Length: 385
Image (spheres, rainbow, N blue to C red):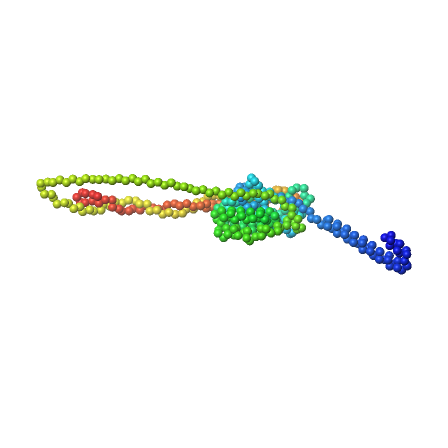
């Protein structure tokens, strides 16, 4: 700038005026550029979305272990839609995982695991989702609890299994890193084996489980848990141990033979008198009657009284409010959120008593009949045979 001033002093007035104007324009441009950059820096610094952790707590009454498929959370909002796997811990029947989310409202529901014996859980196909509000300034840890009640393998229908297979395929296709790569392959392998072990699984459903790894992109890019794509997920990993048992039965056979023989002798004598002509027997049938059982094998169903799942009672932890209406749950969640209270609630299974068929057995519903038979033969001479 000092050199420019010296140059102006050494030139004519009109030339100096032009130069002064040029310098002024350059200064304005530089100042404007500096201001724009400063503003952009400020906007970038304020554009970062704030995040908070959502803890996923899953518990089962029994049967959920390392050989089961995981419980899979489906988390959606206006910005994201992804799946996250929660595996049981080493002791089984309990699993916890954490997902980092940007501030906002989310819905969370779960896909039932399938155990190694083909059993599943009542949370399947409830159609209910929990609503949560993520607030980075909240002092309490935000969590969602999923309680699972085991359905025995013989009570899990083929329709239920087909639904779990379809949902699990969607989850692996659209999952975060807990459902991709080796983790995703392990889940699909367990799904195939566990579905095949269910006595009610149709050949079609078993084949769908077998073909799942061919239909989904298990090695694809994991779904982002935040709109910006910065995932902050942590999950517990479980190791599956596959044990196979085999056995053989051996049988021994033997034979015993018993034989007997009888011999008889005859004697003959002579007389001085001529022998009388030999008598020829005339045999007649003697009949008798007896009662004979005529079998009639029939199949008889077996029944027992069971507690059958009916519906859920939703109980809010913040104020104890309870309802069976999911619409009321969502409305109450909104009211609690407006008051700055926790929107967490529990799903409490409700049961009804029903008489259900649990199997069958066979019974002989036959009857006795009178039958006539020949018990011996006789001759009028008194001889019998």
